[in-house]
Length: 455
Image 1 (cartoon, rainbow, N blue to C red):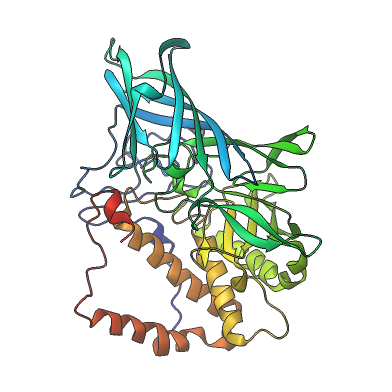
Image 2 (cartoon, rainbow, N blue to C red):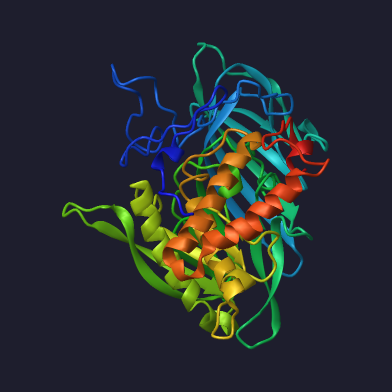
């Protein structure tokens, strides 16, 4: 039967882990207000918009990056050549230098770093080229050897900035930055650019600290053909035209994990609706959030049901969690070629077309799956994006809760579908069947490094 939602699920604790969500309005640390605990109010809360949300005392950090540098902000520019697939990029990474270092280690895979310039307190302290950079294919890292050690003089963290120029390629699989086939406005076959960064593919597009606990803010700009609509996690700040190309600049994001950064660019149309899901106004009402669904132009008439569902789910989640939707907009995008049924990128949620395209001829089973997947992915906007596991061995918390929300919301919106009856007949039996196999394993498994993440 349907259970009454328990918002205490937001705060999870056991002998090895804990997660804490402060009251609405305290989304800060680096994002704003001081998050330190007041005297008499218990232990210091985790910075849920920052790094430490889930603590696992048994975590094996063998393959995790050194903590000598802690990134706080990425300013990324990408210019993919749509025809050749060649990508030219640059990133300015603001970071705290926590100790004296002779080398910098960060994630990089299938990209070539051309140059690195390091600033400390706005002064250049190192500048190196490709000859000083080596790559570890197994660990998927780049090691930047500095001419001399930097930092650590006063034994306090220092503000550093890394300016990195690099090149790469559009991926030939459905991960990193890749092409998805679609039809343009003339009905001809075309391509759209899509990203899939979960679990460890942001490193294929730009050098970064590609671990879920290492959160930072992101500012992104993207150079694409003028006919393309460019989307990312945040709204467009402004656009600069360059003849047949344009550069789209997006607003700065709140702190988030690298795997949640997202890009979509192509010939797209959209429909929109308004959800009352933002922070409270002075009158007590919630601010409006514009929700849009983007599709290839020929399919825009197939997503009205999904848009209505997204608005209803978003408003119910805000009421359920008693916490405003954290971003200024919500875009859902129908992607013809996507690895999973959906991907919860913060503010730019991607779906396979079959999960958003609903017409009068669509079967009830497909409608149920659409509502379930929309609710599942939108719940991640809080549980997974706002509050994030420190490492992938706690992914079961992330996905388990979203799975429950998907079923719960489907039943709430359409009780005549009797979704919980289907749960007993289908979902529970499938779980018991899988659990009976010799290959079954505990719900939480140890993930030591990059090689284990994709298992």
